[in-house]
Length: 364
View 1 (cartoon, one colour):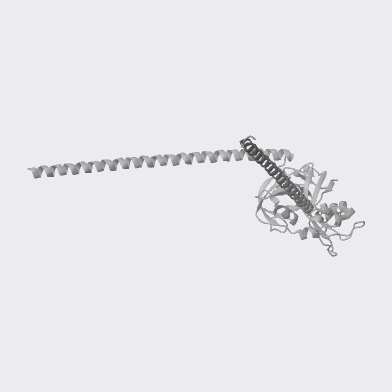
View 2 (cartoon, helix red, strand yellow):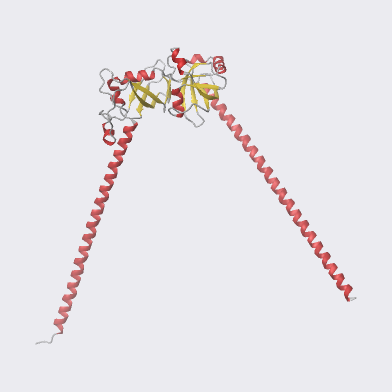
């Protein structure tokens, strides 16, 4: 009987344990399902929020594009064109052989672009000019040579490519081409990148600049123009190489860096950066009189800046030496005053001891 009771209790305990385990497994399963459902709801919520964010961004981008289109259309007097085209080099020799003026910054565009602009009566605004921008944000302007290029491609001359990617860099990648109505330029300030331009051009700077601008249709602030100077212009001083330093205008830079005279050359080449334009940062230079200014070269400015930095360093070192000397004098004076005070105190102690000794002597 006792054995049967023990077996029943054992089975009962086993059943209770199994039931507890089933209940615990069910509880864990329910909790896991709730967790999975919560995660699913969270993912769905995040997906919906992402979709809403993207829809909002798309609406804002469309709004900005529409505002930009309206602004450009108004600025261009009712003409709008903007497209992303693949850049490729143009055949400049063909344009030169045809005797086309101002071909140095004229691009070749597809026929569809010409048709779009003609439908909008773009010639009413004068020469058809375009802003060309790389994905990296570099931008310049150009005219159009003709609308005979392959569809989806813009053919760029070397000057335009140099302004976008740097001198001698390959013409490659997509660019954004946008029609622009540009005002005629009234003022331009150039800065040579290297020294020697003023000496080489002499009194004929105006003629040299006019010759350099003649092949161009536009100028943009930040453009770099390649200027060729003949070896000997009437009335000009002896030509100097880009690294030379014989002119008064470049003398300060020469003091810092120096240079050597170069031998005779067919012509000298200088890169001039367009530092400032008026009335806007991009202008048309076709049939316009512009006031031109050429400031000291970037190389000279850097040399002057180095001289100024050196002068400042020397001045700081001089002030530091003076401060150190004054501090040494102050410490010496304090030490001397302390020594004198210590001596006076010692003398007072000696005198006090002397008086005490005298007072201790018996009276005579």
